[in-house]
Length: 144
Image (cartoon, rainbow, N blue to C red; front, side, top):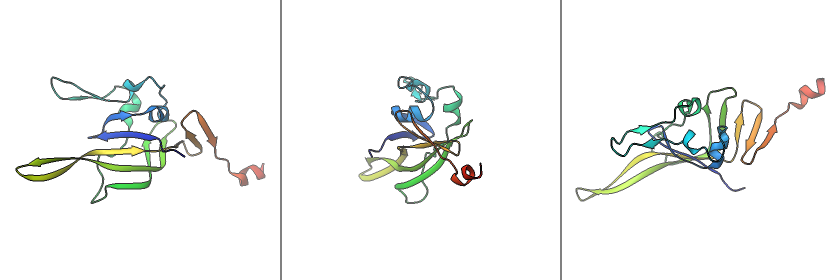
């Protein structure tokens, strides 16, 4: 199954989101402005969309230690009704390299995330394109 790219975040600012990422948070394919922050060209300040989703996103903008890549990542990325969690996701450190004072220097500028499914609440598995599967407890069904 082809991996769906998710969100690239630097300093907790969303700089890129594809249609699957928009769908994860309930936005339509043309509503990029509801999730992606913009940088004011004059002041250089980031402006985050003023909606509950953009304000409530929880994507760490750095990775611990020497980790530069992590697969099988899971995280509750939005506390809402219902909560949104990504599972079996990938994330990797975004770095910028430059030559400073004759030395090659690499600095971390954020973290990119990719996932191909997400959970709404505890029991609804979702995939891009509107696919939804509700997990059912077979033992509970047998009791009924």
